[in-house]
Each structure stands twice: as structure tokens, then as C-alpha cells.
Amino acid sequence: MDTIYQEEILEGWMVVYIDDIIIYSETWEDHVQYIERVLTTIETTSNYFAHITSSLYKLCSKDVVFEITKERRDAYQRIKHELTNAPVLIFPDFELPFRLYIDAPCSHALGAALHQRPVVDGEPRQGVLCYIFRQLKDSEARYGATQTEFLC
Image (cartoon, rainbow, N blue to C red; front, side, top):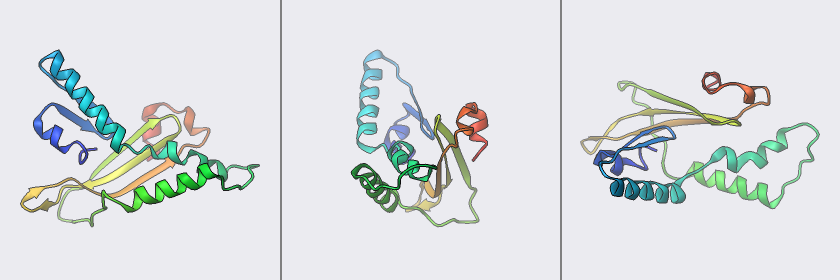
């Protein structure tokens, strides 16, 4: 999300940590304007992978008939598209520090992203080396948020 909201972060009224957003403003009018701007961006750019792929994960369960429905076909095509288009993954630079962001945004999935900040055209840019997402097992879904994040 650092890439999606880079302009807002540089303007100084937003802080982003994985999927958490904090908005700062001096007036109520500015705050409403910032919230509308963020919500508009979320509507047009957000990818809820665990939600999109839930119908595909059900195929991995016992006693489930393996049937490719329109919903499952659409989910597969959407994930394939999202994973093969921008933001493009970068190659690691072992001279730079790595940053690992982990999160368990909901009760049925967790994820992590490995980042670096290489210098591109004279400016440091946030780049992603890899993403890791997976659905939680039934027993893991009962863990608290902190314990779930340790599963990464």
C-alpha cells in the first residue's frame, strides 16, 4: 500500500503499515476530504486475495466435489491477472536491508511481504521481492491476532 498511497504519504497526512491506514488532519473538512480520497482509492485498487480465493480453497477440503464453477473460474482468472501485473516484483539487492511486513488481516488468512528500498532514478523506491498469502486452517483461525502473525 506504500506504493498505492505514495503521494498521500509524501503530502504528510497519511501513515500506512501493511493494511492499516492512519489519517492526520487539522480540520474536520480536511479530514472528510482525506477519508473520501482514501476510500475512492481503496474501491479502485484493493485486492482482497483471501476473499477472492475462498471458493478455490474449498476445493482442497475433504468431501468436496471437485467442480469448476463460474465463480471459481473467475477467481482463478482474477488472481492470475493480479499476480502477473503491476506492481512487478523486484530482484533482491543484498547490499540493502530487507523489510518483512506480516499481517493477519482477518480470521481466515494471513500474509507477508518482503520489501527493499532500491534507488531508482536517484530516489529510493519501495519495492516488493515476494508475497506470501495463505488461508488459515480451522484450528489456526481460533488463534489471537499476535499468535496468528507468528505463523508467518
